[in-house]
Each structure stands twice: as C-alpha cells, then as structure tokens.
Image (cartoon, rainbow, N blue to C red; front, side, top):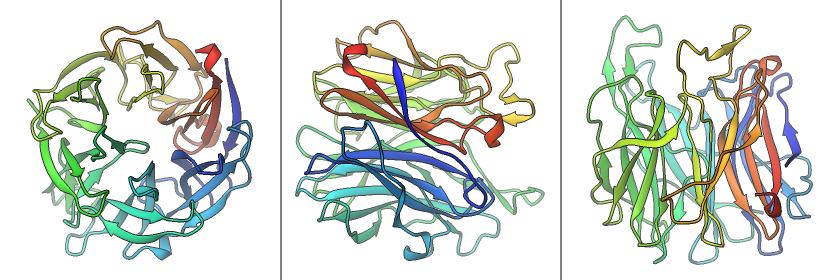
Length: 364
C-alpha cells in the first residue's frame, strides 16, 4: 500500500533528522523542510538547522538535502525544529518553526517559541523573521499544524508549559509543569498575532494536554485534538475562532503518549494518522533498552462525514523495533505524502530517522 520514498538516516554528527512539513510550489515541485541535527546528540534542545529536499515528480522521488536556515542565522537560537509550511494569503510561503534558546535569567531552563519567516520567491530566500510569542516560555507547536480558515484567518494551537522552581532537579533549577493549550490567531496574514483562548487542564496528570492540533469543521467551528498520557487523544471544540473552548474530553482515538495528525482532503474527507495502541498492561516504551515510545503501529482512517464516523484502521507501518510519530500529511493530485519519524533500535531511538512515504489515493 505505502511506498517508502526516502529515508533521512542518522549518521555521525547528524544524530537526528525529524519533524518536517511539505508545500507544493507554484511550478508543481514539492518542497519538504525538516530539522537536521548537527551534533552527536539527538536531544530536543541539541543544535539543529532546517534543511530541505525537493521533489519534481509529485513525490515519487526527492533530491538531496540542502540547508534552508542555519541555527546560526537566527538570533539567540540554539535549535530550530518542528516546521509547518503554509501558502499565505498574499502568495508568500510561510515557514513556521520553533526556536529553542537558553533562558536569559533562569539557569537550566530553555525557551521554546513559535516563529515565522517568509519567502516571496518559492523558498529560494527568506525574509521578515518574527518571533510570534516574545515572552520567555516553553511553547510547543508541533510540525505541520498551522492552518488557514475559510475566511483567510491563520490559526495554530500551542501547548504551554509553565515552569516551577525545583532546586534538586537534575536538569537545573527549574522544571516544566503539565501543559495547557492556547490558540494563536492572525487576521492580517501573519503580521500580528493574538492569544485567542485556552483549553485548560480539568485535573492534573503527568504531561498535561500536550501537542495540540486543530482542523476546521464544515460548519466553521474548530476541532482540537490533543496528546495525553491517559491512553487516548483528548478533544475540544470552539465555535468562535478559538476564543472559548469546550471542556477537554476523551476522544474515540486510543493512543500511547504520542501525537496524532488530522487533515481535510480536497474532496472533503478527513484523514487521521496516529498510533492506536495505548500503553496498557505494562506495555513498554523501550525495545532492547532503546526508547521507541510504544509508537507502533502507525495507522490511518478516513471520515467521509466530517468526523462523525471513521473507516476501519489501515496499517502504514508495523515494525516492532521502531517507533513512528510526528506526521506531516500532504495531498498531491494522485497521492498522499507522509513525512514522519521512523527510527529503530539500530538508530538509537524513534526520533532519529526521518521517512517520506507515499500512498496512492486509489489505495486509500
């Protein structure tokens, strides 16, 4: 069913390749931008640049990677990761990503802030870099998660982790609290952004409401899907562009501690991609002592009625020595492209190898 198009394997001081996004260029080429780590560490805060690869044949092949934005080119950056690509209303390409930086006053604490940079020449050069949230915070915007509403409004959700003092922490003087989720909205094509509303924790549990994503329903409302460590994705709804949200609740989507991806296709269907097996009965997140997150298998399902019902799951990946996560989903004329972490025990963890796969629409 799925065909593996390209693997970005870790090697030497490129210990990790992960979390990318696609966009179709005006000439029909497909640009994929992802995080390429430039050290022997694959830790989330380790140095990483943004690299790209281009397909000239609707995703059947991709060329060799090339640098897009180096970490050294962005002020105060120690790491660049979790890209989203979006065609803006004025025709520019918007490249969203997270900038990691050392907190200016708190030892041991990193900032994680969503940023935007633009291209007016189809990705050849980039300009007008902006930090969307200047407050020194740990805000997580997953890859491939920025959307445009029917009226042109730009929306994304972040998981906000506030910090607290813990002097005996092995990570430093501070650690992060469980997340709650905040909507960011722009009505001027990304020039300015406002915090629109939040989805708060209804009770305290390990990781909180992590790694949210959002789609627009056919009636104009917003549907937010949220990673938790409770064996399910949670969900919340907004009927006012994210100003207010319903109390988060358990969705129908079972899961380990792993995000899902959901997008509307051109024919109106919704496609969801996720790991459906929760961490039950002591199911381990490790294989042979290597962390894979229990993120296996990777499946998809299709809804033809705006999320009311879903097709049976179909397996994309099912290697028990690997983990599959952080999916980018991109539709072409004849296929669905998926970009996702696919690291194995041999790679040192599921986040270290990046894969692009292709599914023909006729096989969905």
